[in-house]
Image (cartoon, rainbow, N blue to C red; front, side, top):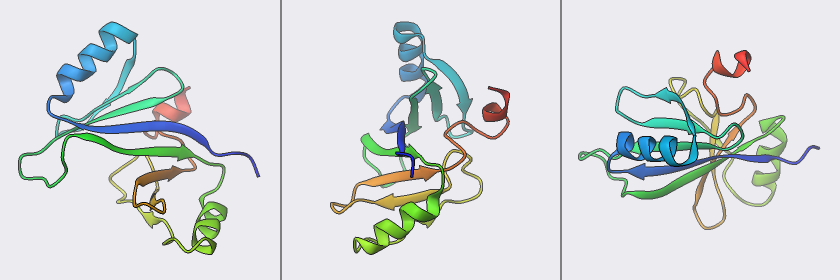
Amino acid sequence: MPRPRLRHLAFVVQDAKKLADFYREQFAMELFHQDPDGSHFLTDGYINLALIQQRLDGDVAAGFNHFGFEVDAVEPIADRLAAAGLPRPAQRPSDRPFAEYRAIDPEGNWFDLSAHGFLPPGVAEAQ
């Protein structure tokens, strides 16, 4: 089975636009998506950076939030996680185009699993 590829890092931030502008200006990252809530999604062409806009009514603190693996198939990974005594990955809501499943490691850190990659549908096919 091919090795899963780390392709996505996500941070909850206080000013997603300001940080997106910083990474675009200082590191030539490309903005490929913006959510209605103000979250910005950038890429360097290989690793994607999600800048999730912190919400005042939310319960998630600013800082590191999760990472994501691109995999050829989710089911074999899910089977291995379950065999290791971890919960099977949970399917993400269908309105989140960047990853199909969310899982946790033995210490409770979140990570995403995606067989279609971390660009939104349409963008992925255009590349």
